[in-house]
Image (cartoon, rainbow, N blue to C red; front, side):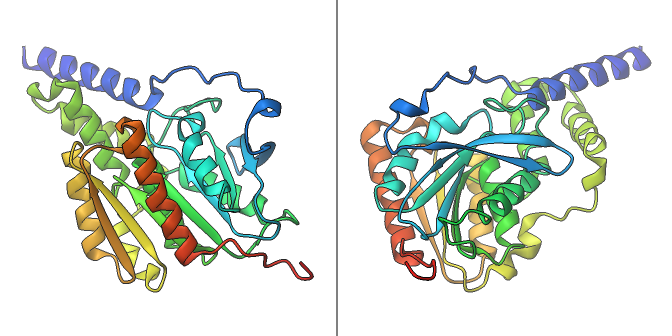
Length: 290
């Protein structure tokens, strides 16, 4: 009986983890860039060991910084288009793409581990363009995208300002949240089995420290943190990240998370995002001769 119970819980945990990492999201909509506002263009880039990714580049003032917008877990690039438009209206170049297992990108998510390399590859490819500032980037990300932003902010000197919304310090935190949300934590050891399975699946990242261990490297980089009351587990993580982050920093607390905001709340939120980047990363040309 004990062996049967052990095997049964292990099987349930494995299936639950598979469901989390495979993701269940709406199919990516078919979008004709020729009819979209802002005149975006397709821009593809290669990820070392991960194939290619398709992105949309929204041109701003020639030679100005680029803001890379990173969608969250169970989301995709088309879900953040209003934020992109708000940034482009202020002459920023803006870029967005789908992380692995989201939108048009196939595969299995690692909830941030491998996705960090995807953002790094995107920035590297963007820096080769002759119409952007290759040395100054702004980043925005929510939950999984927020973790990816933090990891790049602590390692890439080209990140000149960034915003994270309901981020977490370690992808294992998101596994715990998703398992808890499933309601299956009433079964003994489900959380432990899922955590063990996730660590085994991402064995190559076994020495990866929580991003909070490296936050001191962001000293001097303007940073803005959004915390949502309706995501209490992430709010605790986000508050701890804010506390450990060096200056300059700012935190704004919202009642609802960005994906669930009303049109009016989202408009106010996007205005705060735009104001932050205008203050800390103005859209001015840095291309010689421009």
